[in-house]
Length: 275
Image (tube, rainbow, N blue to C red; front, side, top):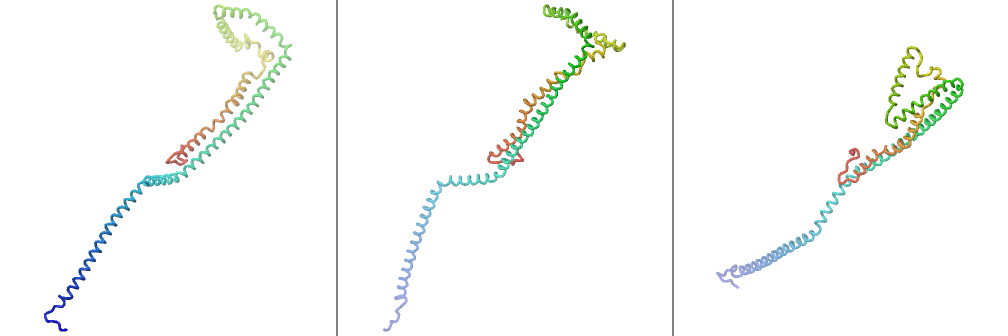
């Protein structure tokens, strides 16, 4: 078939087909673009919804998160304080034992001291009895040689007895104190007796030394010495031994401070820093 001259094949056949294809392509592109936009829009809305749901879901756990964090901090802080805590505990126990041993040491010393003083007291008692016994034997043996001087002393005491009764009656009845005059007179006589002994070798108011040593003087342990030693024994049992149980107080107080430091929170000092 012969194509007519002047017939444009591209315009008549190809262009419509091309336009049809382009139309289909544009329509499909528009369709897929709209679908993409819809998917993107739906995705954004879904994402917002999911994020909102997650935020809502997180709200109840916000406090728990803080609690967990704080608990973790507490655990870390407590773990750091464990060494000084146990250091204080062991140091406190050590001071308790030091206090006990100190008290036992002082107690033992005071018990031995008390036993020693009992021995001294018994020796004083034996010496007291022995000295009086020796003096009794001495005066008994010398009674024949000394009886004359004893009689003179007895007569003097009998002669002076009315004067003593007079001074006593005057003092209790009208309040006149003649004892002052007696003391002054006796002191004056002692002074005069010392002068006569110094210049002439004899006393006015004392027997000669040989007679005094034989008939009147005897070395005896005094009662006040026995009483003094008895008081020492009494103090050893009633004061020193009970006081032994207070020697460890400073160690117990120190131990108490270490135990108190063990219970502190949050910071605990080292045992060497506790005073």
